[in-house]
Picture (cartoon, chains in turn cyan, blue):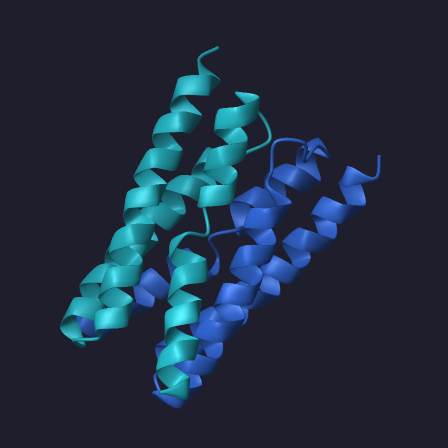
Length: 85
Length: 85
């Protein structure tokens, strides 16, 4: 139970890890210092983690990376929106 | 073997995921648009993933998150260095 808590907390922190960056980009409408390469590298990486989690049948890995992947798509969308300005 | 490759590729992409951001911060010496909250949230989250990986004895999780955690420490250090300017 203790380890489920640690795994769940780890999952919550990292799966919503880009939320503060999304909020900041949305609020400031400025993305000049943010690395698009970072966002895209994480997007691909988390998609592969998702596949790996599915393979080893680890539900925490699956859910965490599915949500991470979704936030990365949002982050990349916001980045591209404000980069054009 | 195919799944080991996918897991390893996922690990490589995400464990070095902040490297492009570190390079950009170092190059531009500007961090105004980067969220410190994001960096600190990932730092704690990856430390907990590391503990969880150790518990379930998954070497890929352990190594990936140990390296991620290290890069986050570097990223936070660079952020704080250039924020002062």
